[in-house]
Length: 569
Image (cartoon, rainbow, N blue to C red):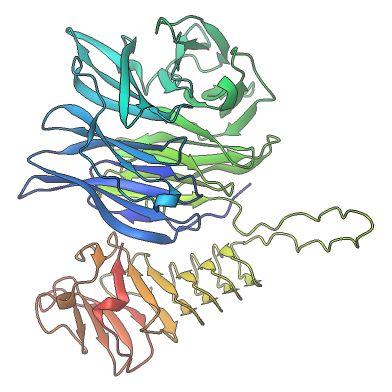
C-alpha cells in the first residue's frame, strides 16, 4: 500500500466554522469562528502554522461582534500575497471579509471595517467557495434568494485604487444540487465552471458548463467523460493555470471495483494527459470530492463516505506528477467515531499538503499534513570538469515494526508508525512522532517537536527550545499512556496539551490557578499537578472533586515548573 508520512492531527475545539489557507511564503493559516453562549459574542480567530505543523503564531482575534453567529467561513491568499477571510454574519444575513498583510507585512491583520462581499439583492445566503483571481482580487460563490428565486451567485471583487469594485451575477438556478451531483468553482479570470453528473441507463455522463465573461451565462457544454456508476455520482473540481482544470468523479472498473477517477482538462475541455484511478471503498460518497494540484506536479484528493447512520469518514489519496499513486485512499485522523465531514485540501510550497475536516461529535476542526517529509533529493549530474556529486542516502521508510532512525543536520520529519521505535533527529529543527508502541525519541540539537503518541514513550528534546505534545488518549482508570520526558528545560521547553484529550482545560496558555506543585490538587481549579518529589505529572479534571487524577507523564524531579511551561491546543 502506497503511503506518505503524515503529521499528528491538529485539533481546534469549540469551533463553529473553519478553514485552512495556504500562504504565499510556504506557511499556512487556520481560521475558525467561536460564539460565546452567555454573551452571544461571535469571534473569528486565526493561527499561523509552518509546513511542519509547528505553531508559528498562536491564536489571535481577527474580528468580533456581539449578538450574532459566524457560521460559515472560507479564505484564500491573493495574487499580491495578502490573505482574505470571508464569513457569514447571522445578524445581518450578509457575507463580510477581513484582510491580512503579505509575508513582508508579517501577515498582520489589516485595519478597517469588514468589507461587504455579498450583493444586497441576495438573501438567505449559504457561502459555497472562494477563489483568487489573476488581477489580485477574489471571487466568492454563494447560494441565496433574489426576487423569490433560488440561485448560486457569484461576487467578483477587484482591487480599484485603495478600494474594491464588485460585480455580481447568478451562475445557475439549482443551488440545491451543489455538493451533490453538481460542483462549481471560480477560475482565475473570474469566470466559473459548473460540473453536472447526468444519470442515465447504466452510466452517468459528466458535463462541464463554463460561463462567459461577457454574458455571465453558460456558453458551452463539454462532455468530460462517463462513469459506470448509474446515479448519484459526485464530481469535484479545481482550477489550474492557463484556464485548465482538474476533475474527479466516482467510477467503477470493468470488474466492478469502485475508484475515484482523476483527469486534467485544458481550457477547451479536452483531456490533457493520462487519467489516474484511485481504488476507494465501496461506500456511499457524501458531498463533493475535493482535489488540488500539488507544488511537485502531483495531485491530492479527499472525500467523505458514509459507513452507517451518523457515521461518516474522510479519506485522502495522492499521486505523483507521472500518475503513480503515492498515497492510497486512507482514513484521516485518529478518531473516526461519529461524523467526520466537510473535507478540504490546501497545497503547500514544499510539495506537501494539508487535509482538514470537521468532527461533528466534538465540534472540533481537525487538520493533518501529508507529504514526503525529509525525502532527500536524487543524485545530481555534475558539470564538467567538476567531480561528481555524492548522492544523498535513500529515503527512510517507517514500518509497523521496531524502527531505528538517525537524522543528520537537516530538518527531519519522521513518524515511526507501529512498534517500539528509536528515532533520533540529530542536528536541525526536527519533528519526531512515535505513533503507537513504546518509543524512544531524541530530538538532538535544534528546536524539535516530539509526539510520543500511544504507549509508554521516552522523550528527550536535547539542546534547543523543544516542544513535547501530549495528544493521545488517556484512560480514566489505570492509564498506561504515560510518557517520560528527560532533561526538560523550564527556560526553553514547552509541553503542549491537546484540549480534545484534556477537555477541562481552556485553549491557550495554561491559567496560573490551573497549575499546582504537589502530589495532588489543592483546590477545585487545579488541572495540571506536578509532584516534584517523584517527577510525576497529573491531569485532574475537577481538582479536589470526586474524579481521580490521572498520571500522564513523568519529568525530572525538583524542576522549577510553572504554568508558563504549558500551552493548550
